[in-house]
Length: 136
Image 1: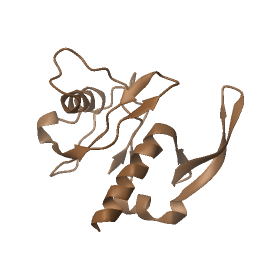
Image 2: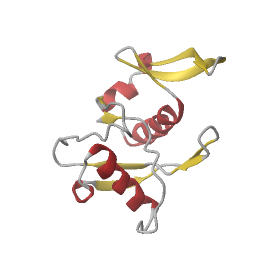
Image 3: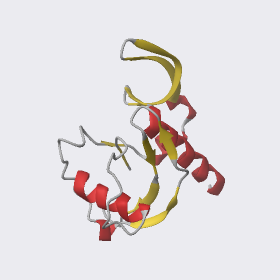
C-alpha cells in the first residue's frame, strides 16, 4: 500500500466531486489511472492551517500493483508499506520536530523504516487504521 504526501491539488471546475478531484490528482501526480481505482469510501476531511487547505481523503484499491509515474515537481517520493505495518503499535511513536526554527514537542508519527510519517498524512492513516480495526 503506497503512503505518500497528501496531494495538494485543488478542486477544479471539471471535477464533479471531491472524489473525482482526488482521483484526478492521483492520476496527475503519481500516474495512477483513475478508472483502475475502486473507491471504498471517504475519511474525515481535515483542515491544514499552514497551507490553508481542506483535505478530503478517500480510500481506494486496485486489482493490480500500480506502476507509478511520479510528477517530480509535485511528489518527492512514494513509500510502499503493508497495511499491517500501521496496525503494529510498535511503529507509532512520538518525537520533537523542528519546523522553521520552532520545535513541536511530542508529535505523534508512524516509523516507516526509520522515516517519520507525521502531520496530515499520519492523521489520515490513523483514522484509516481505526476503520480497519473495527472490521477485523
